[in-house]
Image 1 (cartoon, rainbow, N blue to C red):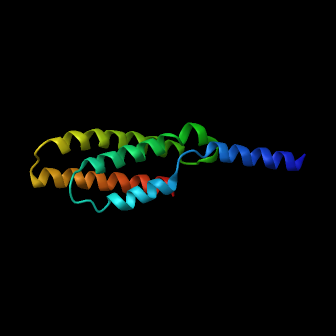
Image 2 (cartoon, rainbow, N blue to C red; image 1 turned 90 degrees about the vertical axis):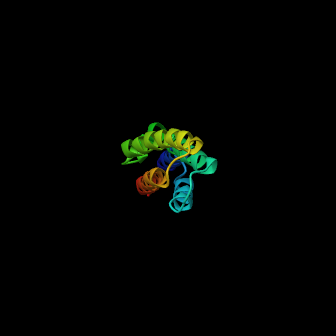
Image 3 (cartoon, rainbow, N blue to C red; image 1 turned 180 degrees about the horizontal axis):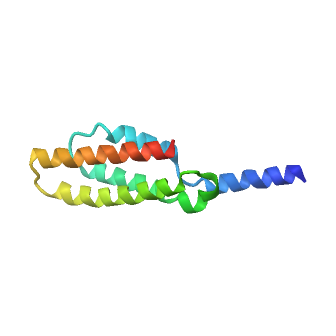
Length: 115
């Protein structure tokens, strides 16, 4: 009986862990040093948001910080929208710098949440 319970628990844990913290960490490290708004930066924000969005509801029982993961997903999606609209505009260097700083903070926060 104990073996069956352990096996069932293992399947549940594997089945619930759909979000990928390693992907978030890699994207975070890659994008904390960006110096210009590009389509690729915007795509990375969406990739991170997708990865985070798969975590909370499926892994809630296993994650003490499920709410923070959900919040990080929402922030990253919003930042992605801002990124695409800002990338299409001709911003002053100060305006672009402000947006890039916000993106870097978003990535740092996402990485902290999944660690």
